[in-house]
Amino acid sequence: MFRFPCNGELDMTAGELKDAERRALNILDKWNDCTGVVSRGGSYYYELQGVIEDAVRCGAQAACGVHEPLESEK
Image (cartoon, rainbow, N blue to C red; front, side, top):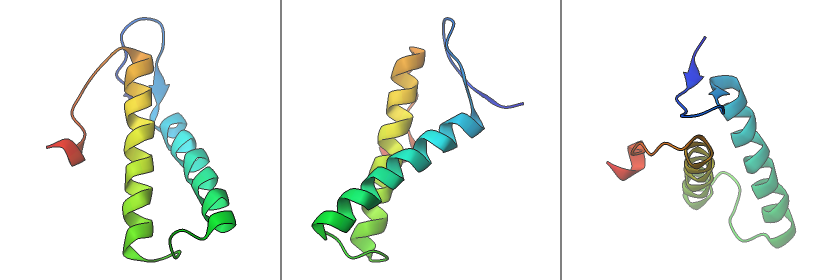
């Protein structure tokens, strides 16, 4: 089973990371439905989703005490 690399006692499976990303994207969708800032399905919408996914990965890394560059940082 794949596990997100962590130092210490915390670790996260790939499924748990995907669940966290889905939760964050659902929050984004609820916010965007209320505000209408970006049109769903447009290029800005997909860019915003990528930023949210990266933020979740950064948070997971911080919780695990690791720092690995994300694809968007390379």
